[in-house]
Length: 85
Image (cartoon, rainbow, N blue to C red; front, side, top):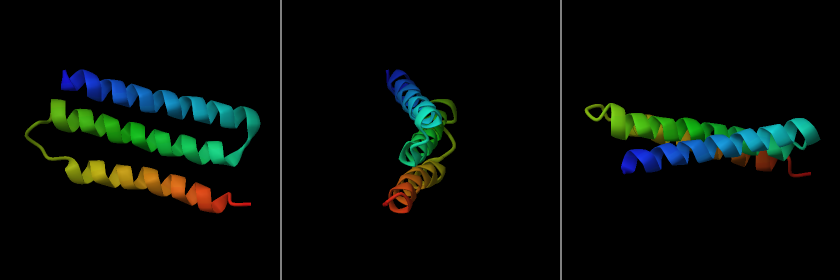
């Protein structure tokens, strides 16, 4: 059951990233770009979660998951600060 939930979370993150980045390609609104990059990093985070909890149960990937989550939030924060005008 947990594997299904983790996989659905990764799929939802990927879908959001794809939609945001495709909207950026059409409109060139830069905040869409930063949001898309954030969700792309969150997709990587969710894939690492699946690998950590389902595939490699004997290896602890918590630090890598936390680092990718932090990178995702920092990308969005940078985009919000950079595009303030």
